[in-house]
Image (cartoon, rainbow, N blue to C red; front, side, top):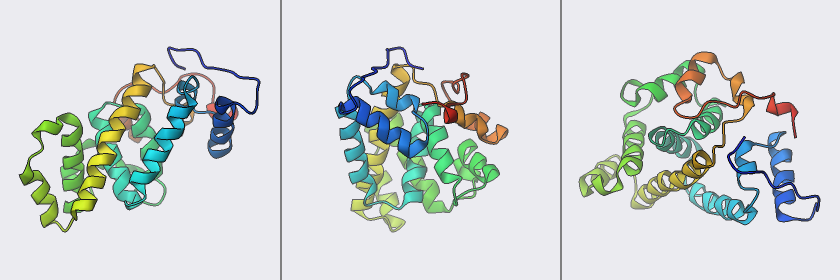
Amino acid sequence: MTYINTVTDGDPGSKTAQMFARAQAGYGYLPNMVKAFSHRPEVMEAWNGLLASIKSGMDLRRYELVTMAAAKELRSSYCMLAHGSILLNGHFTAPELQAVVEDVDTSPLNETERAIMRFAAKVVRDATSVSERDVNDLRQRGISDGEIFDIVAAAAVRCFFSKTLDALGAQPDGVYHEIEPHLKRALVVGRDIDAGCDLSRSA
């Protein structure tokens, strides 16, 4: 599951127990990513608050595309699978999403979305290489300075979460084995999916 032990607290009023209960209720199982934060549930709480504040000004599709671009640069299978699953819900078919993952420039996206994903990837790959020209390119596509901030913030915070999970050895949950095989192979860019039991049936 992870390289560090998962805290199990018998006190249902503890922050860790409450975090586990919320995750169980929301996902129907306890994700490995939540277990990774069991020693510091207050950090997960702060992360959720930060993420909510960034997402509040963004269209869901744009946020997810930015996150996918960042996760691919970070080689985060967990985040690729999790956010790819969200995009499969009303935004893309499996073949369409696979095309986005494999090559943004030839994918079924519009030019603005392609530019946003390239920009987000550059932020993660080497933020010092981002130039005023890169920002002006987004402006010329009708993206406001506030929206540019949102894109940068969404890409930058993914570095914290993805690197935390991977450094602690958190594998993507077994439920992601249910993704269409060709797409699943494209989304697994780093750590393999948990080979254990079907986590959708476990606590």
